[in-house]
Image 1: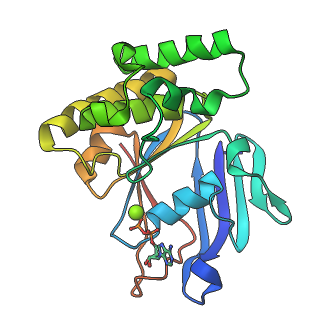
Image 2 (image 1 turned 180 degrees about the horizontal axis):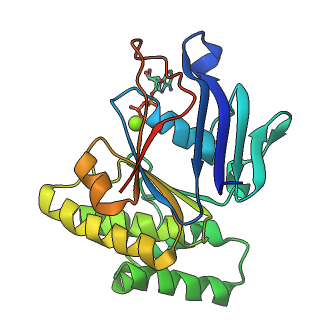
Length: 230
Ligand code: ADP
Ligand code: MG
């Protein structure tokens, strides 16, 4: 069985009749970094929301690391899925320091343990001197690195990145891209990077997945996405 297994997924917003997914399937191996490409409105963000547990599928199954997360009568809450998220509009909590942001997902740990992990994570993204700062005191690139640290701190089994470069200028994007690639290598974490830029995906990922797009923009109904191994 694959590490991430999505099968027969069906989903429509607000119980509407326009299905975003109509029997969608996808599988990823452990450690795979997949670039998910496709036109705007093809359901990339929706897929990540379903994987993260922010929404429940109408039908189909989602399993991560051999655990059924959604399917039948099963629905595992987002905080129990071991999924890390970096969304373009899912920024840092503005009222918390960088250190508190990174510590956010570590509530189950003892204080010293938490402090150690926060230190390690901030070191990994070279922000060890910024723990006491607030997000607005950081540059865009530093904020994005802090967001990576926050997502990785609880050691998720799956990291989901939704257009993480879209608010960055070109120079910054190039360096964040390098950092992310290195982070993914270093941690060996299974991940999905959503981007509309094929170059981003090729620079970072080992696999490209094309979201199929139907005639109707609302409808993605394909048994399997096209997978290109790089
Ligand atoms: P992508 O991330 O590939 O651009 P989305 O997953 O955001 O695509 O959207 C897939 C489809 O679902 C689109 O037709 C979009 O208009 C619709 N959609 C997305 N979010 C919502 C929402 N909150 N309510 C209703 N429809 C939505
Ligand atoms: Mg999107």
